[in-house]
Image (cartoon, rainbow, N blue to C red; front, side):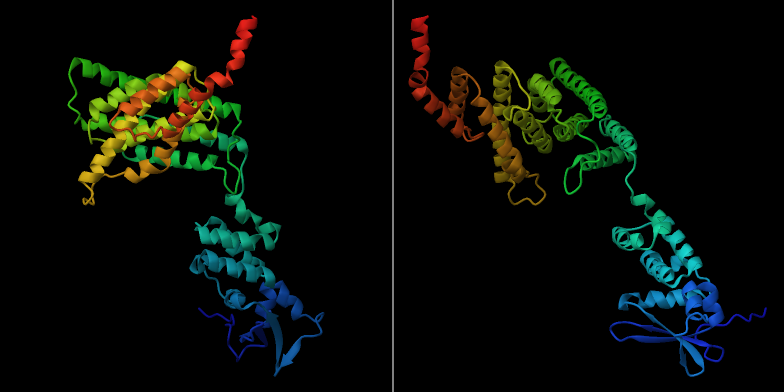
Length: 437
């Protein structure tokens, strides 16, 4: 089959030279054909028309100079070649096609630009592609903004719907395989959606509908956790548990991890009250269940997670975000002082015995840093809110323990001593009021 279509670079048939020049001094000559250029490019159609009297003559050919940046030179050459032959844009990749698109727009090559835009809009992008697209496309004109459709914000109602659907997945019972992976991904993305960093959270933190449905999901999770705790305690009464039931240990670990994650979400939504009230009520059962199926060194990670949840709950009480009656505060700190003391001693013992074992489970650093410090600080703050007699009971037990450093209540002890010493002088006005009355 015979074709009379000219080829770029064919000097014998060329009647125009396109000189691509850059500020750095690059000078590329391309032997082209005015008929091809004018048919595919409005820019060259104008430059080669009689209405453009400044067109230079180079030898027997017209010469059209095109100035471009050094980085754009390759894309300009590709755009000119595409006027002669059709190639799939996928050959250039996303960023290559983006450069050709930019050159095609500048040269008025509508057909090439449309092909590049269609490919870019439909192709998968990586993060570097997205950044380059965001820098380039807005400068090309409104007709190419369709490329940015996947990056645009959407209606808040749709975001809320996705958030709530993901939250239901994130608080469902433990599952295996793909379902577990979906649950983990949902938890990670939900936390990201609520994070306030350089950008605002995707969900309004005061959305009443969101809070209501989140509370329902959390209530369901906590109800299942309570049923699980009750089943463990019932089994323990009927037949002593041997502490090596891997299935029960895994289920307990999953529940505690879910509750810990829920604490993070509720904290962002300012909804910690529901988890605080629940945890204050089930704390003795949680400790008993942990001791039943995770004795000694077993499930050290689960014990750490229990400490994390307790730290978050105690911090909410200590900061005044959730108000508990005096007796509940006293009960809460008594339970978790004892557990933390046992927990810390176990970690120290494991660290000493397995210090040279690279595979040993030694989460000591985690506990000694943010979690442990937060737990200690919260316990001290709550102890100092209790009546003096209650403080005396807690401090007396603490001083008599062989693990007096775990947790360190020195600050509470110092404050208690000072308050007690100056109490009569500071409150002497009360005696005067009683005598008058």
